Image (cartoon, rainbow, N blue to C red; front, side, top):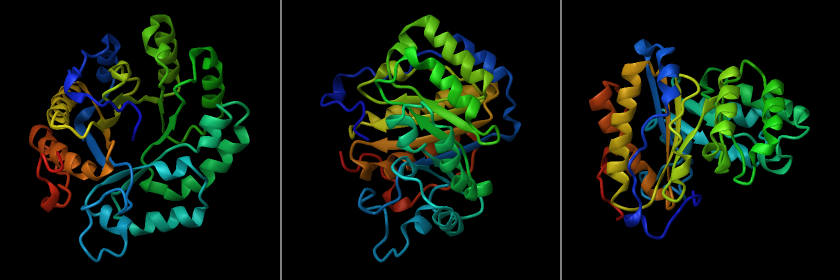
Length: 296
């Protein structure tokens, strides 16, 4: 992921901001008794995750899904796959594995949510073939999608199938820097029970709004291929622990890198600490690669 990348990560203040005041209200509505955590990468292909797959691996998804319990499925952003493809992916993975598909770009980027009712149906029909392995679908809007088009988001949410869980990532800075706008969109997300994605990337610290709109935290973490990546992840674990104590029900945490081959390393580090601090029992992916600092 190149979005928000910088050439000077050593000069960035990576401190996590304080929670938005209304996040506590949302967490207090949750129940963390059956807390679940899903951690994964954005891709499973060998070309990106160099060094992750043992020599001779024949099926990358089959291997990946036995190392991680989830995948942020960016492939669905670039085309609509048929049900038979989705079913093939589903059948290769363990029963507790979850897919988090990205909404196709014809809806989000080309039509910019305008007049997309038929496309929503076309996109979601095969996605339903994931059945119980569907985690949460997420919509990413362009960084030039501005608050003047907020009505499009409402119309989109009114057309979106109510039984399919949804998260939205906003990227234009005015969504967060204008308090009146921010309050409007947060209220809209709460009304439709949409998770408000938090994106942690070096060059866009304004996207760390720390405002949950449901008791689900959907976090897209982008490392900088720098030694700071590991303490940044540690800080996230401690913040998530606080959220869980307050009522967080689910964590969806996906690790990206400007050079994706480091993503499994960072994920393994994050999962180890998450298991220790929150008492989760997630598998630590491929212990042979889980050595902080490799590649730096």
